[in-house]
Image (cartoon, rainbow, N blue to C red):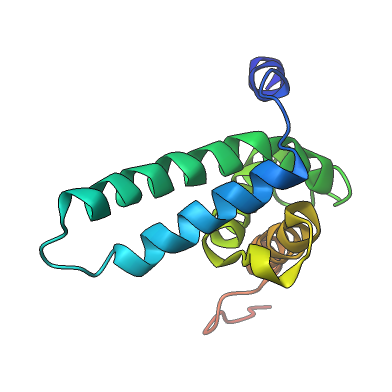
Length: 134
């Protein structure tokens, strides 16, 4: 766990301008994903979008750790909670619209928290069909 925290701590945070630029690249790539025969320019835009998505995820992993520390770890290890939060972060990167004017961290916080809460709820839920015996 310590090596993970050390490795994500080395990644520089994004500036607001970088958030907007990378968010626009991710959106442009998402619009091109369904193309059957992309042109060379479209392929370049797809690769740029993939790199932008990776950069946004890596730069915001510290946010996932910070959110995970707010939750009690009932039934889940912190690393599992971080993993679930990372799934929420990926979803936030895919859905982020920089044109709306919100900071990415504000937007991503909701997705990260939602993914963690869902994992905690599923972990504590009694399976359907479970019978109580005396």
